[in-house]
Image (cartoon, rainbow, N blue to C red; front, top):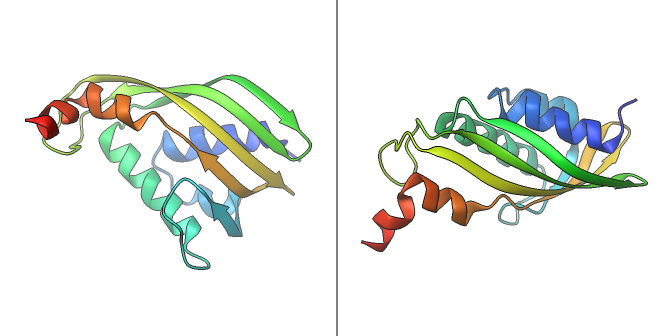
Length: 139
């Protein structure tokens, strides 16, 4: 059975990087608790993750994830990494075609090979700045 880091890497590489939202049903528990998004009613967390996969892949179909550092304690992985790609999709305006390089901070609790709880903190402010959306919003 895969450990917490391997499961986290799989959802990044096989889900977010490829646009394959079906991986969520394999790697996330049905009662997933997702702290990255707004509070959700029971059972909606996996749908929010699937929507995030679609949005990320639409924005940057060539996105590549790299986990640079991680610590696993028991069933929890804390990881720092990067997401890099080209903003060929729209994001608060038309596609910028900008090269994107943002930091990621992820914490996931994995039980029996499935993510049961997740906290994610991608650097959305850097994403806004790098795509030019921040300048458009400020104008």
